[in-house]
Image (cartoon, rainbow, N blue to C red):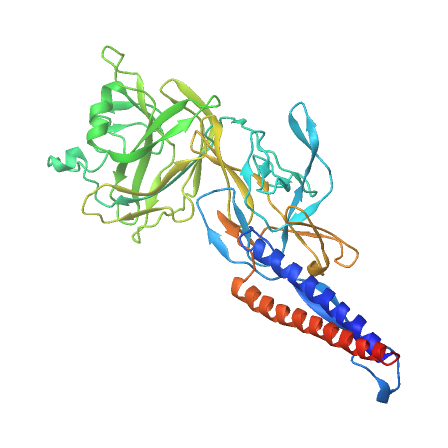
Length: 468
């Protein structure tokens, strides 16, 4: 029966090589498909039972060998919602099952893909080129923490970001040990200080000729004393604050040195509460002391330290902000010599902002979905998570460059998007040169099997001729 076995074995060989050619052709066809994972072909021999001396080479069976774990090349681009995975993991996606009121509905069946060419559609869904919708976990707009643990189809809405009133001001700077005030530059004795013959009380406004010693960290500067104050203080910078409605409130700061005592050089910080207007009463408050003495030791460090100050409610230009804290941080203020004699700010910012509308969306490295608003603020909207499998090569391949879990692949293990690369795409892992090499070898094997069939046919003809 060996000659007949040779015939069937050759047919099996042709079928196996044809299966290999089918996979090679599919790989070549998808060599430019985003996130495509090639399918290789492996072969297993089929041997009939028999004594060792009577064993035959046997037949053959072809089967697919997945390369789902083999990385494709990652290429960057300028599209903020395009994603690539560098390493393990797959995107979790869903497909549309139809529509309701013109909006897509979803199957609710998780599929998995490496295709990351996502773009926002007209409904705010992130859909890739194969028509699958990205899943992730939404985050709280205030804390940035996830609002759940189960991935869902992400939808980005063009909501307004509510205004936030300023509650914290961060201010760090170096104060020149000899401030170049206008009075100092003009040669006035002690002009770098705000004390001596012209001073103000700790609880009230300036009083001309007041014999009090250095200020104690309180008080206001009224309109009638504004010029004197400006001549004996230096600019401390400024920034814009915001109230609950998002209205902008400009804040101007000035520093006044009140004591040159070695090892206890003292400064006061003021913020402007009003403007000089012709005809206004001279008692109108213009500048307000923050209420704390800043005393520097011989090393130029605050002693005692002043890390933060609670300003409480402050009024600027007729608008009141409640509960404002001024933060300097540890060693945030220093006093060192500066030839310019001014204040060198290293940080001045605050945490308030006006309302804004979503203007763009981008997904960064690590999978954070970040919205940018017209007020210049950014906000985390969601996290893109990944699915991992103990045996990803056992996933069931589906249309649209997706996979489904199987018993052999194991259940999906949800993980953070640590391996996600933003503004990038992963290419196919098909190597054209390698596929052509496999194609030549497969063609030769296919042809060789046909030659065996031809030879067997000739032998059978000889057997038939025996009875003629």
